[in-house]
Length: 90
Image 1 (tube, rainbow, N blue to C red):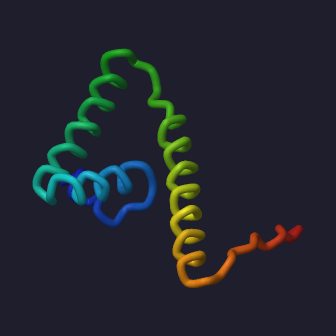
Image 2: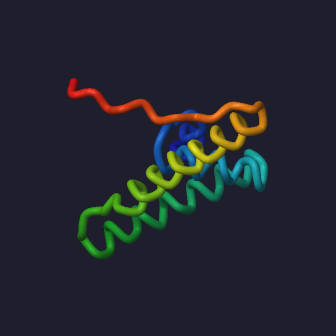
């Protein structure tokens, strides 16, 4: 149930589920995501240490970079060039 709910979730597990669904199909993606969640839960319970989300934060950063690269390629294919907007102090 928890793995199936990841299909619309943003973040590491949602991205993992969608990546696996594209590779394997829905049923196997649910199984793979449930397996990953179970392994994390087992590790937390066996070591009695909190789960660190450093991997998920790193993956979120990489996903953002991949999306930016994809957008730049699409824009270049259409004859455009993307420029970053300067950050405001809000």
